[in-house]
Image (cartoon, rainbow, N blue to C red):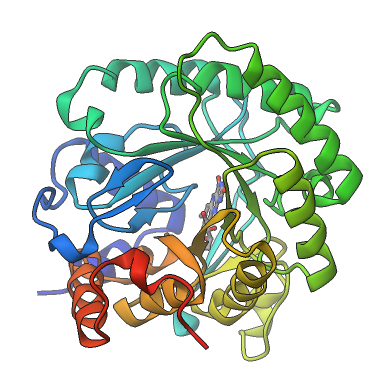
Length: 352
Ligand SMILES: Cc1cc2nc3c(=O)[nH]c(=O)nc-3n(C[C@H](O)[C@H](O)[C@H](O)COP(=O)(O)O)c2cc1C
């Protein structure tokens, strides 16, 4: 019988994705929650994760499949990117498979149903006992036609802070003109000051940790600036990183020239380099989530050893079989034990 991933690859990429989300919503996903090896349990920002492997932003942009994804065994789910207003994103086609590299290029451009629908879905889950003991992050963006970027992030922060366990300021998507410019020192400083000001006005007893998601293709000077500004503005963590605009050699030329962000294995070493550098720069003062090109337990383990307290993946799932997540978790537990680590936290940053 042909494999699930082969069948899905007979469909255009966006159709395959919609079909996958629909199948999850209909309860056709794997049921693997509560079965994690105890060595995988980890505590980050005071939150308990049954395992450190999360689903990266972009898979569930509208928070439609949060519960099924948690039940499928992800250690946490990051829903979004959501923008205040619904928007259609870029014209299709805008998602391209590179099967030989097991990679994709996307220029979706924050297509999403907007904050209202997103918040309604998170609210509907709020009292679910399973949701309550799980970790759900909200990834926030800016509408394409919004000139005051801070205003959109502030709107997002106000809307989700009582509903999400952590909040991500995504300033690294390459498909919204000007967005990545928010990673520059003065822009980031101004943005984070506004966001923190808004958070201080929220009458919430406990604010969720604030994270910033950055690009994978930043040089050391840019990483230093980001570390300085995020620490000064009391950010709790960084996600490294988003898709890359670079095109490593060996990609099929016709596809490599498509505009958009590249993800999957060709992004692995680039995102690892940024992760390794950032881990050295921040000296434990911020916690890091490593994402980019994970397709195996070894890949996830490498990111942890380079300094990631948690990891995420997306593109690996497009090419992997439904068992991929279970395989990664099982393999990770084996690798941790093989090297004498008693927990994920023990292994963080131990690569030389
Ligand atoms: C189709 C697609 C859509 C994405 N959409 C988002 C998004 O909305 N927000 C975001 O922060 N990252 C988004 N990403 C980036 C992923 O979250 C992740 O950072 C990147 O793909 C690298 O991980 P991977 O190699 O495991 O896919 C998207 C990636 C893909 C492939």
